[in-house]
Amino acid sequence: MLVIGLSASLLGPAAGVLTSVLWTGTSICFTAAGRRLGPTVVNATRIGVAIILLAIIHRLFFSVDDAWIPAVNGRQLLLLALSGVVGLSIGDQALFTAFVDIGPRLSNLLMTTAPVFATIFAWLVLGERLGLIALTGMGITIVGIAWVILERPRRPAPHATGHRTRGVLLAVFGAACQACGLMLSKAGMGHGWMADAEHLDPQAATLVRMVFAGVGVLPIIALSRARNRRALARGQLLTRRGSRLAGLGFTLAGTLIGPVLGVWMSLVAADATSVGIAQTLLSLTPIFILPYAAFVEREHVSVRAVVGAVIAVVGVAMLFVVA
Image (cartoon, rainbow, N blue to C red; front, side, top):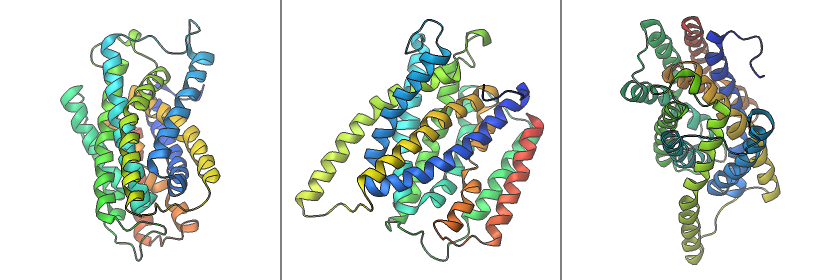
C-alpha cells in the first residue's frame, strides 16, 4: 500500500531512500529525547512501544489467521532473533550514545561505513555479488558522504558531551551492527535457503526482530541502572537537559517514524534488492540532515558539504539505474 505505482525493480531503492528520510526524523527526535531521558531509557522505551504498534499493524492488515505474532520456523526465528539483538539492541544503543556524545550529524556521517560492512557480510553469508555499475554507484555515494566526514567542523556540535573519541568508535561499531542486522534479517525472511513463495513478509519480520530486540535490551538496561547508581553514590549528578515529558514526546514520535515505519521500510529494501545497495541507500541520512544541522542546530554547513551531497546523489542515481 505504500508502494502503489512503483515497478518491482524500483521498489527496493525507493524503500531505501524513504528509510533514510524516516531515519533523519528519528535521529533528530531521539537526540532530543536522549538529552532529556538518557540513551538507555530512549532505547528501551522505543522498542517497547514499537512492538505494540507493529503487533497492531500486523493484526489489522497482514495477519491471515487473526494472529498477533506471525508464524515462523525455527531457523527464521533464530536468524531474526540475532538480527534484533545485534542490529536493534546492541547497535542502536551504541548509536544513541554516540548521538549524545557527538551529535546526530557526525554520528550519522560515521554510520556511512555500514554499506561496506553490509556488502562484505552479504557476500560471505548470502553469496550476493554486485556488478561493476552497482559497486561504482555505492563507491560514489560513500565518497560523497566521506567528503563531508573528512571536514573538521569549525566548532563542536551544540550540546555534545565532549566524549568525541568514544562517540566516533560507538558510531562505527553501530554501523557494523546495523549492517549485520540487515543481512541477518534478509536471511531470516528466507533469502538464500527458502523458495520465494515461502519468504516471510518484511512487516512480519520487523515485528519478530523487534520482539527479540526488546529481550536483548534488558541486560543493557540493567547495566545502565547499575552504572547510574554508582555515579549517584559518588555524588556525580547525571546531566539531563529539558523536561522528561518533552523527552517522552520526542521518544514516541521517533518510535513511530523510525522503529516502526523506518525499520519496516529497511526490510522492504533488503527484501527487494541486494543488502549492499539497500544499506547504501539506508545511509543517506547525513545528506537529508544537512538542512536541520544548518537551521536548527546552527552548525556551519560548508560548500564542501553541499558538494559532497551532490556527489552522493549521483551515486544514488546509478543505483536506481541498475535496480
